[in-house]
Image 1: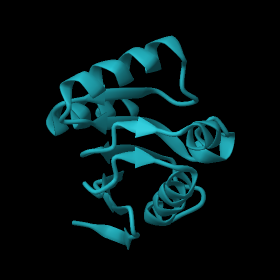
Image 2: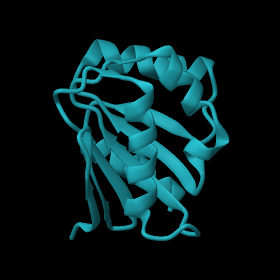
Image 3: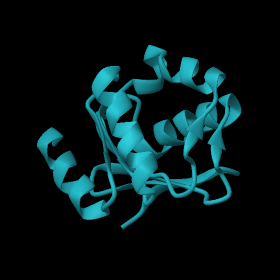
Amino acid sequence: MKENYVKSDYAQTWLENEIVVQDIDPKVTEVNLEMAMQFVLDRKAASGSAERMVRVLVIVNNAININQEAKKYYELEDSYINIKAIAMVMDNYIASFVANLVFKIKKNRVPTEVFNNREKALKWLEKYK
């Protein structure tokens, strides 16, 4: 069941089985600073509590690039408050391969993995329950 549903111009976000699910709109191909900030606000709202530690599942769809301003914003601690782990599902094999490579080289503030399958992503998130 979808709890704390939030819809913005860029994504739909909700809490489901103690996981914040963020489904990025397919029209988003590049994430800019405004979008990144909205994604973080939406995730916080969907978690339902400032104290709740959550796992996050991001359905990336067509977003295959993040601009420099958004990258800098995502490096800030505030972007990861109350997040245990992030699993990203990307249907573009090349983009997911590159993203996984980047996360291996440059460590994220929280465990982060990229998958091409939602079920595998959810199974990985179970480790952080």
